[in-house]
Image (tube, rainbow, N blue to C red; front, side):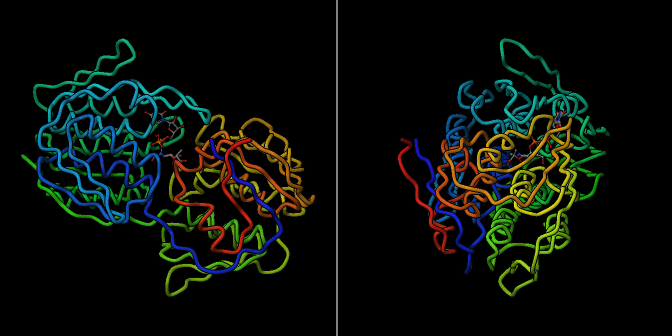
Length: 420
Ligand code: EPZ
């Protein structure tokens, strides 16, 4: 198992290219199951989650070929049941259920368990499938959905924490081949949902309102093959922007889309970071002393939960008190105790973390617990005095393409080593 060794204290400088968005490409790859014709998806990030989705689609019967930053997929003949172990290992794979149900009128996948950041139920996904007329049965660790016909209908998909991203994606993918009109209320508005709707429309689907809380889908008889370029990863861009601020550096994020990052850029500006549009994307640099800020994570276009840990690392470096409240996932503070190992002073009070920032951090061995927590530890390590060893970086490889290579490009003293 690998770990990352980081010698901190070097301001990041230079340009870095933002990869395609993990949370857009996963449902888009699953959507190719809706047609027997070939599809080509470009700007596909080299991530373990993406390769995993490729294995799942291959298991279901599709031909999957990765080459030159693209993936070609043809799901000529497919089966309706996913492999228990494969699907259980990656939550995001639940989004094969909608396309299988849409095309085959039946789908069986293993019930995704909880994960370190929260219980993460799929009741809203299933509620949407039932609204389309599917019968849903949970048995033996599997969830089965089947229907003689799928019929469009109106449904409300809001839950405990508001909208659901993959729930909206899954139901949308089932509804595109249903008879008649479906209306999803309290739909997720994330750019990744809009990107999926764009790909489905390129395949011949009829969708309006993607990006708003009300999505209308008019079912069609069948879909055809299509090509698509995935949007850049706004969370990867946010991570590099925060790393630039944490190290008092200046970085250009090539390909970043500021219009997808308003909440993050607004908070960075409030904390004293200079953010400018740049011909190739975004330019970020510190603008004097950092100021403490308060953050509450919310569904899009609010502040993203996937950038909560990273901004907490920045606030640990910032003199003053910041309050960071997590409203989406009930246990997404695993990084707090590891940041404390680097000298951060953070207290958890219910859904909030009170960050008493400004104490200099010093390097130490730390343990990654999940994807975004590990990104926060890397940022803290880049700013800390001495050497930080981030263990279990397989978490970070799930969502960041070549992170150590990209950071070295920006001048960081970072290397990947076999875990000792
Ligand atoms: C997506 O997960 C992302 N994953 C997550 O990114 C991201 O954190 C999350 O959206 C929120 O933005 C992918 O796109 C692969 P949700 P998803 O359904 O769709 C509750 C990362 O770091 N809920 O929007 O699974 C749920 O428990 C990952 O890249 C129900 O109650 O998240 C949570 O509290 C982590 N019932 C809230 O809604 C349901 O049926 C939002 O979850 C579904 C969700």
